[in-house]
Image 1 (tube, helix red, strand yellow):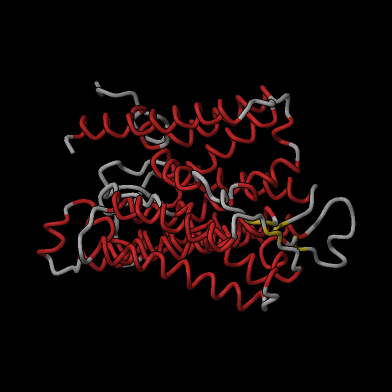
Image 2 (spheres, one colour):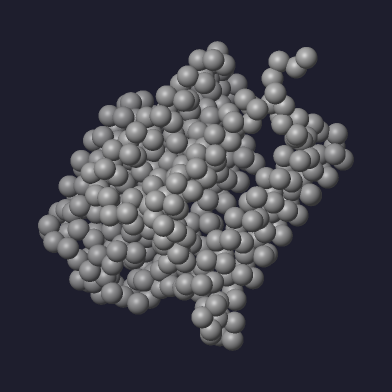
Amino acid sequence: MANETKTKSGISVSDFFSKYTMIIALVAVFILFYFLTEGRLLLPQNMSNLLIQNGYVFVMACGMLLCILTGGNIDLSVGSVICMVGGVAAVMITNKDMNPILSIVVCLLIGLLAGVWQGFWIGYVRIPPFITTLGGMFIFRGIGRLILDSKTIAVQNETFLNIFMKYIKIPGLDDGDFLITPMIVGVLAAVFVIFSTVLGRAKKAKKGYRQNNIVADYGKAIAIAAVILFYCTKLSQYKGISIMLVWVVVICLIYHFITSKTVLGRYFYAVGGNEKATKLSGIDTNKVYFIAYANMGLLAGLCGLLCLARVGSANGSTGTSFEMDAIGSCFIGGASAYGGSGSIPGAIIGALLLGVINMGMSIMGIGDSWQYVVKGAVLLIAVIFDVVSSRKKGR
């Protein structure tokens, strides 16, 4: 007799819940707030705002995951970099009337330089990441406030705002109350997901590789396709696809490819798994640390622009505690507190979970104080789960 109950797909129940814990939690939280908000959570406007309001979290989580993979390290300075970059952009575009495209390029370079600065001390001088980024958190926040001169500066430049916040509408397709473009994009994306699964299984079969259960693979693909179609249907009933959503999807896809398909991506996992062994195998671990934090600075710079465009202004408090959202998303999404384990899809699920909690509690009229309590509790539970699971597996 088998020791464990098996699902119809041949996977043990314990393995199933272990593998899909965060997805199950996301679905459960979504259903909970659906009833608590009397269905208002599913209104088209709220579904559209769910990703737009949390766009910076998705982008930051992609960079933060690389830092965490190197050994559970984090970057505490990203919120301050967002403030600094947002301040520079606001001053350049509003006060100096500079070209918005040039301003964007300059701001991205500033974010990259901030990351390079910290990456140098962490990677090559080996100052602990916590201390380095804690110092950066104060330094960059101070620079941001000096640049803004302790004022709030609004940005109303149409070109800048359109680059990050405009909604995509095609004349002839999106003239009515129900927009067609999001549905076309949704159908194409759903077909791509299913086709990729079929093609991937065919390639593995041809090469004789071991494959996952066919029911599990196709079930996962169909579920993802259904979620995409559902979300695009909601977008069709509101304003359509935002450029912000395009930025988020592109960044997430790029980093998913890097972490899952490239040699560089494997280096991050190797350093977090066993840095000494990685170094002995000929990999420059100093360079890996440097790239992780330089990259985080670049993405923080991009988030500074995204936040500036969404809010429409920047001040000395912009980006406060944003780093905690990114860190929480990664750990809630399954990244190991010890490093060497985690994925971009997991970080996305973690960000979505936090986003649903924030939006659900806001719709219910619950204050920020309780939202912090709930988010902190969710993060603690996720990390405890990871630590306990690691001990059981003997890691």
